[in-house]
Length: 438
View (cartoon, rainbow, N blue to C red):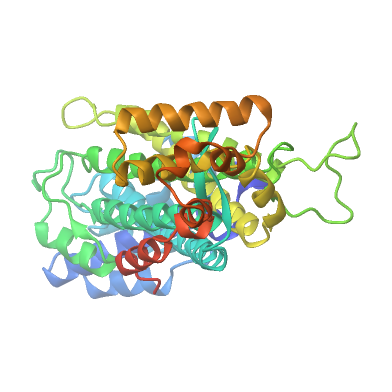
């Protein structure tokens, strides 16, 4: 992973030092369990814990691996070097490498998930605060990229808040799915290891025991996890794209913060490009790209093959580190977002009021006018307004057909964006009831 897009805590989760530290702990707990069932002397367990290196000598393990061409064996040989008494004891007894690797992978994904959840909660907090602050700020809503009806900027942010909250819930479920460990031997049938060892180690590590394994933990668990990561990335991308669109010159409703010393373009000094949002968009695409190989990893040969291993060495760290950075960056953008209420108002009135055509139509129908006739009547007035640059309310006032159905007071009230968004409080109340801010 590029250091440019990596935050310290998440990077440390996937460091070689942390991986080997977890391997050491898993093996030591396994020896504790073997001690309890009388297969290993207490002196070995004490030596393991007393000799635990901090930090692990990654370079030494790599040097041994260069000779033996097997990472797990190299690690065991390294442990034997620092704990000589285990050489003649039942260290790693009845286990296979995947018992250690998969249990470790589960622990790393749990740690990564906790960091991602923390980032999502920070983003959620920023979105909630902004949504409440701009709850009644009128702006134009768009469908198909075309002006539709007035809405509020707070509702736009509230939708993003709800989306992030749903992603927190999804990630919690996905974390539960991968919070499992296994120590079940070469083909998962405990031929040479007591299931108690597995239960003991998983309990110590805060993991559930895999219900049934082969030589590995079933990869459908990880497929579900990385699919969830992909969904979260899609949400982050959606939010960043909408904000980029709202920063377009022709819209100019929001903007990334821009420092006094910042430069937006090497060629055009006037530019303030949404480079951070574009960065978030790009990073989200990369995270989504890791979903497909995770799905492919489900289909391994019989009790296992090795085709998943190289994939997971890449997608485990890269997907979580990238998403961690993307969420962090989007949170900073939201926190410092420049919001142009004047542009929102100007855009709201850009079409001279025709975006109030539906409430005019509905009010006519409520008064008893035939629906088809009312539609044609309002459509004709709206198209005339747009074609001639007229004011829609003025056009309706001058048309005797409307006077028969709507009073002046009723017309004016229809064109009040706050009246149109009278249900904003209801939406926010429902939103905050479903997603407890705490």
